[in-house]
Length: 324
Image (tube, rainbow, N blue to C red; front, side, top):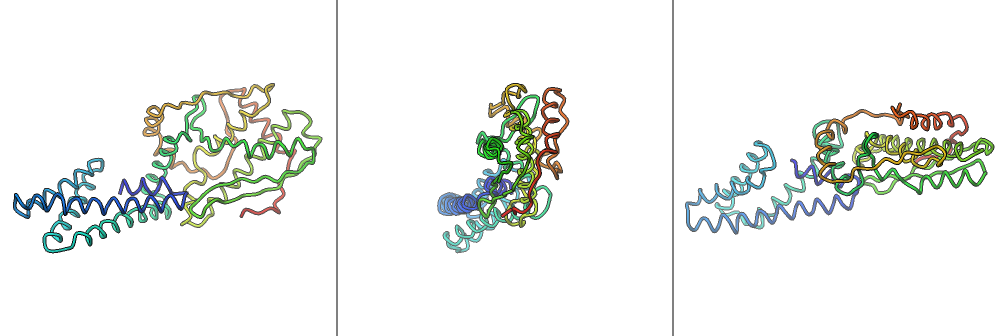
């Protein structure tokens, strides 16, 4: 089920992408069946016994599954033998092509359903492939002395909402954060209040801003965690890199006098993919249920985290705004 799992996971949070990828998998299955029956099997049957032509075509199809384990190759070989026998006994090529297309589409849907329904190898494989795809797209990088960093959490728009509200001096902010699942873009909105006098200098304003951002992104994760299983929202909820990525982004926006971190990301694809192969399956299975501010070995960075934690006493959330 490996290739189907990759297709499903790569598009797990985008409905249109998943549909197109499923159609592509179905079209590939149909094309393979046409090539095997009208091309390989029919041509070989002119020169060798019919049974040998069936076996040869099946062996070729199994060879396209060399990336899989022995069970995957055996399954491919068996299916191709059955299809070859059916063709030799009069089954129409277009019927076999339609059958193969349906099998591929059904496998994509089945593997995604397994990943969505419960923890297990399907979910681990889906998340492993999904994050690997983010690395390939340049969205997930590695920061030395910090860890994996998801660039989608480095959102200037969200930070700008909180910062502009603090600068305005009104003592109120209406923050909006977005996440995507199969249903499309989802919105989480929260209202915050504070005494403008507490934002007395850039350092205090930054700490309050960072705390509110961590709070609303945590609310977004909770919203995903309770989303319908079929929406794929639960797959991306509370991932191992969510809280560290949001926190690092906030730390990097600290005023210059606080010496914000400027860690250099590893962007070399080969190095990132190798590290991911070593760490990925363990990381995607980590159980995370909240965005805690972690203890950091670097005293300077820990001092910034302590400022964010202390600033929680200066703002409060107004729960009258609801997640949509």
